[in-house]
Image: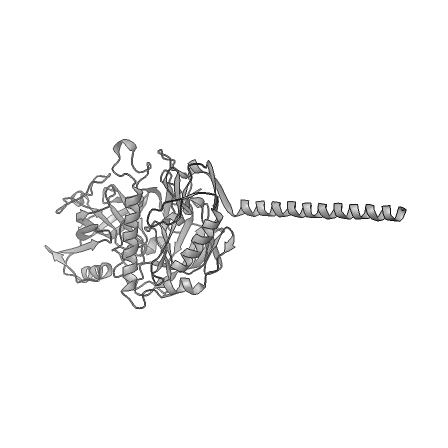
Length: 481
């Protein structure tokens, strides 16, 4: 009897200890799951995704002389609500963005080897058509002329020529916030004569067309993918960047300007062609610049020229690639994507077939269709607790957040050559269309051969460093703060 009782007790103890083991194991598994969930998601208040109507200017950024404040063209930091020239219309903005993307894709489709990437060589061959892709949404203010007049320009890594509207506006000028630049009042302004070797070089480097003259002055003409255009004179002028001065800066003095640039004075070209600011000021800034795009339209970032005394140790650099015959663009070697901490099963050939550029002027990142489908599938799986709603082009994955005070957004990371991973902020993952509607902020290309584009929506909040001479591009999270 004692033996049976002892066996019974042992059995009870065994069952209890086994149950305790299962309970402990389940608790540990739950803790691991919770920890994983916290680490690989961004939980934010829905209200925080909506930009404020008042400007919150950042005081952060590199402590360098040639550092400009970056603002969004449609935000309160650029224009006051009482004198608003521009109103953010997401439908129009996304249509303009698609026009820009179509323009970029058409450039590469014209060349049989246009999508191939190679390690960057010295940038000696000018871009032939890097100017025809449309206007940007991020702006800076520079000085033009002597005495200088402030001009607000959209900066664009996909364009080379800098231009501004000029009086007397022989054709037409659109309305802008700053006074239109009047070259007759500047003591440092000169027209570039025509016909001259310099005029031939400039027209070749910007459009690939023969030089054009009017009254012995060198002419330029640019038509953008969104049907905006500018025509005027190639000129030289003093460019002032905060307290720095670039003399004899070649720019376009626009006399006939039309389209979607309303509010801003023109464009600041940061491409890799010979006429870009990067190349013209190479001796002063060593072909080195960086920027941080503000996280919302109601905050500010910076654009800085030159590397300063030191480079942050937290920057991660990936090789800068050159696109055959389209050397104005900055190429990247995108090799993978993760969602919620899980690397997606995408063959690297999917990315290498298309090639990838980084572009400050394209809003929504475009991916090869295979890569985008994998990203979308995983994202939808992790967002299954939120009801989907009808999509707005170019998006196809949109959510109704009207019944949610907060939302847990799966993390997304991009992997580049050189063992570099870039974690995107929540503002680069969801694109807010309305107060209660947000979409996955990516789109798939229709053709797997179309080049992929790392757009500005995904660059928000990152410090992005372009070391053109060093043939590398760097990324750092929290760059604006």
